[in-house]
Image (cartoon, rainbow, N blue to C red; front, top):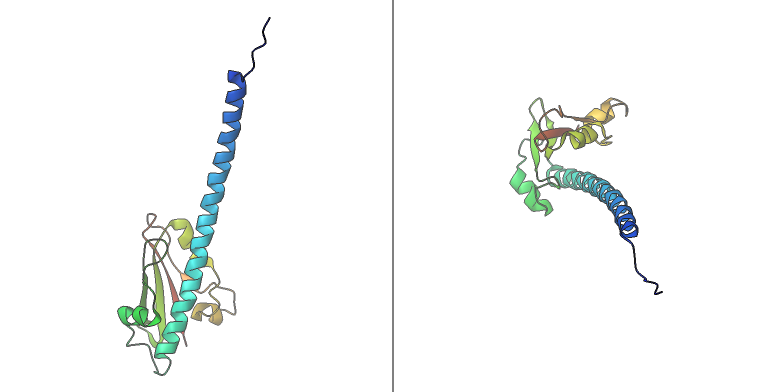
Length: 154
């Protein structure tokens, strides 16, 4: 009698099932890492934008001359954010000593995250004594169409 060696079909199915479970777990981890990286990038870019605006327009009494193209060109970065949307700058119509930074093109969950985040140098955060995040956004539009606004200045 000869003995045959090799793998049975059940053993192969078991291996494939284990590989499937590992793959699903890895995909979830990759999605979480990507989301965290995008959020971190937006945070860093907001800091870079606000620092650039203050350096460029700090000598003026107000921000009424703010211009997206000029500001982004001067600080050497694109107005495009990691979500495929844009950053936009504008002056606060009720106070020209404040500028508004908008983060556009967010999903609902990312909009909620940025609206609740503590933007420590924002007007809303400072005026609330650190109790409010300092940003606002409705976060009810379809994914990719939500906007968060943050007000900076005096």
